[in-house]
Image 1 (cartoon, helix red, strand yellow):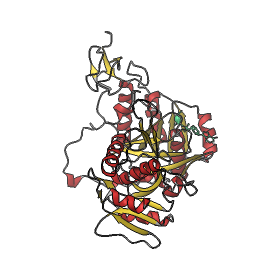
Image 2: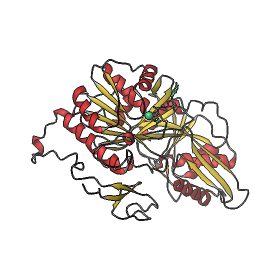
Image 3: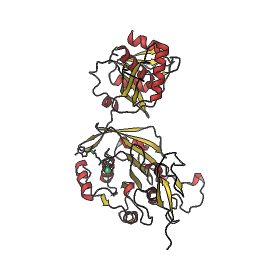
Image 4: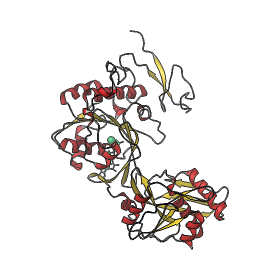
Length: 451
Ligand SMILES: Nc1ncnc2c1ncn2[C@@H]1O[C@H](COP(=O)(O)OP(=O)(O)OP(=O)(O)O)[C@@H](O)[C@H]1O
Ligand SMILES: [Mg+2]
């Protein structure tokens, strides 16, 4: 037999080249190509190719698409209302964040309903998984554990066990023996994903695949896989904090702007059903300048978070500007507006903005919150802890209306806040116990807050 042909794959984006290059022609990263054996024709069939003839859209049956609950409302929401049979879901996340824990809990809940679940692990022994299952209360007769990395063997066992749900932990440890390259290489990850996809579609099994990601996104796998799978979820959180956020990045069956919030405990992940009060847990006693509460939206849910800023004179050189949880450029823009429209001389100050709890906020509705926190710290004036602020900031210093005001205001009232400052708008929502004040400009809002 002739020697196998080789080629080079980019570790970051999966781009292929037949000769080595220093810089990836696909994503522009340096030094990312790795040499691998090329797949032969047999392995690289596409998952969707089932040899079917074209069908009229009206003739396509929908019966298979009933969603199954995972038993965790937070996960169901991120999936778009439950698990779709025959779907392939990729769960990515940093090492030790709790991916296996989440998967085993879901496996436990689904199997406790009498459905069979196959949990394939290439990372841990069945004993290790059993120990974790004991801790999570997921020991069920219908839950099958299988420590294996050979995809041929796994496919065979799937035929025997015939599960409703399969978990593969993790894709980087799986390999197809037909391929020469080692597990975790781009071609192996791609091939294994394609095979799992085919398995899911042919047998109508829901498949969860765990994938490792580094901060740089450099590990072969998830980046390449994202295009192939139906749903991509990222499990994130601060290592030293107990809460975890599950975020949908891609979803062929639902929206991607929902998040699920969990708390890690000794007995596994607990759903956080009341996120606002969770994130504001220790807010009530705060009495310092540079802090204000903002009602933000995460998907369809309002979430109250504390925005903090620290402004201090620069000791030398160029002022430092740092943000955590909000957009850096947006903050720079808000600081420019503060300086130009309100005369706050921030030019010689270091400024730090932080969203407490590690949440990331993308929406402009928190602009006013950032501005108020910065001004509060700059002027050393405390914002009373009874107030929430809301509004998008324009370059001329005007406040623009934001979406879903009613929901945000209702959440603030529910958590016992007494005053809400919103942009001027036509229909002002009313909440008993909550005083709603309108401001057309940033200056007006400051007048209300600082007097
Ligand atoms: N006895 C325990 N009590 C509380 N928390 C625990 C306990 N054991 C493990 N944990 C938590 O579970 C985390 C590990 O979870 P898990 O193994 O599911 O992560 P993972 O994302 O699968 O990691 P890996 O990338 O190594 O596979 C630990 O970081 C810790 O926070
Ligand atoms: Mg794990």
